Amino acid sequence: MTTAIEGIVPVMLTPMTAAGAIDWSGLDRLVAWYGDKGSDALFAVCQSSEMLKLTLPERVDLARRVREAAPKGMPVIASGHISPALDDQIAELRAMAETGIDALILVTNRLDPDNAGFDAFRAALDTLLSKLPADLPLGLYECPAPYRRLLSDDEFSYCRDTGRFVVLKDVSCDLDTVRRRARLAEGSPFNVINANAAIAFDAMRAGSRGFSGVFTNFHPDLYAWLYRNRDRDDQFIHELKVFLALAAMGESMGYPKLAKLYHQRLGTFDSPASRVVDYDVEERHWAAGVLLDHIHEGTERFRARVEAGG
Image 1 (tube, rainbow, N blue to C red):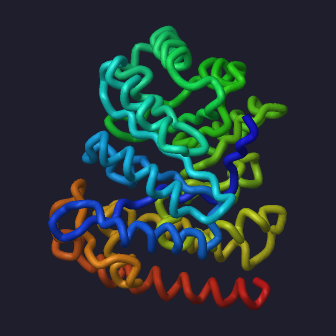
Image 2 (cartoon, rainbow, N blue to C red):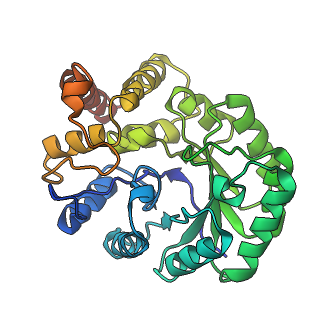
């Protein structure tokens, strides 16, 4: 296995038509936007993609289309096992494995739906490993839904020692945990990538091999610049990391539909339709539209400063 997943890995949106079907032409434009904005890999089927609301054929088609549309050399990873029963998960993962993706991502809460602990996690993992292609790189994702199931150090080490895993999307939101996991991963291909914007820069300095948070759907290029310059420590770095952390607080205002509204404004796709958020974001979350204005203005200002050398 030679696939390396690192850098800026957007958790992709799934563009939808006003009628709620996947907007395939909008998806192609979104993939191109991620590529133009400095992304290093794409996470095609995840919570931001609304995977819990997509059928298995939709999840499979989504991963395959992203793999086909992605720029040459850009890895595409995908998850999509959402069922509680292990036999159903095997069917889901096998179908996803056939799409041509570069790494198949296992969701930690599906490996232990009842939160029973290490033995249950290991038993489910061992079963899945025996059923999946041995040459397909794997990853792990501490998806917050239906519940956030963080890995213990023993579980992390067990996965590392299989030699099958190349990435963990870390959702601990804790700098000490990121730092400890990065140390545990040393000397292996198992990259830890933080997903929390508040600690993004410090996590990069502590060993996170990039960033994979939800605001990669707004300004992945700014996170990419931050990652490339993680050894710097100056006023501009401080201002940028604060802006990125504060902007990401908008996640609570109807995400992922909030991000879809942003891309509708950009012209990436036509509709902000979402199966997860079925209400009017600007009606329920007061001044959400104004917040998007501020995020866009701040993003463009920081882009201009980056272009001028930071």
